[in-house]
Length: 105
Image 1: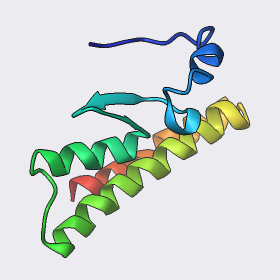
Image 2: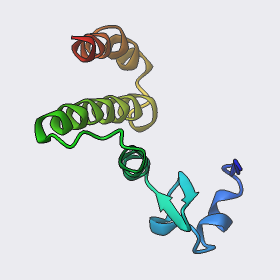
Image 3: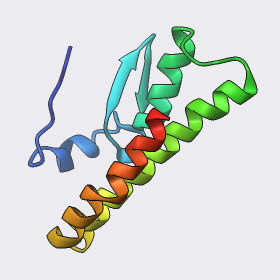
């Protein structure tokens, strides 16, 4: 069941104690309440045998995840921290595109 929490309701929901680290997203599965998207992704990939056992293959998966996280952080920096729309547009049309090409390689 999907439960969408609006920005207005988040402060009261956060104080409920249901959200470890006071963070979203939250996934309830197997009697557990899991938070932080990266940890949830790793839990699900291991639960459903989608995570490589070979250390090098696991490294490759983790390197792509880290690159994705770097891109999200860069987006947040431009969009919300500095509110630099021009910088965001320049980054998105150059470095971001170049990094996506690296994943395809």
